[in-house]
Image (cartoon, rainbow, N blue to C red; front, side, top):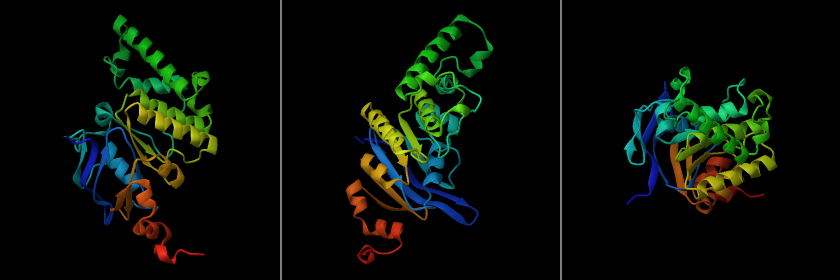
Length: 260
């Protein structure tokens, strides 16, 4: 029985004459931390956009828990169990931290956002439960004291954490982190690393797109490398770090020539 929760099969996306993702096939194991790396322009973020449903592939498939979700729009993939963050936090600036996390909870709510138009007991009970859950998530990321602060007034690191909390509110099985450490200081980076480990330890699956090699290699169980949109290598962090093709792709010359 396969332990794969997320997979791509011959995934391809072209923009005019540019092939950003080219025939990429890889699989992510359930309950693992999986790194997706590559030099600038390798196609990593495009791959994330294809997996999360923000753009459609030119060809190929995306599979989630054995189900073909290629035709599902982004919001339906969230409801299915795939959430993501972005290179730059995407937040509603006028919402408070609490309101922001609550929007993520509504994905799993029985009544949903549309129910907000009606005033009835079931809706009130659900809103109370959502508020309680959201406060718990804010506490988990260290923002409980900022629940009533508008997103625009939070620091960059706090905004990054808030986006993660909103993703967690949807109770995803798989979380896609796109450059989650970008712009963070070392203390904030360590906090995010420990949070990702805790998420993995509770059974969630994490996929990381990262430029910080120390961060991704220190966390990942397995790593996939893209270069010019194509699959270059796969393996454990140790295998990837010693792979001559990967070294050449990052440094622009073969391993044996990279000396003093």
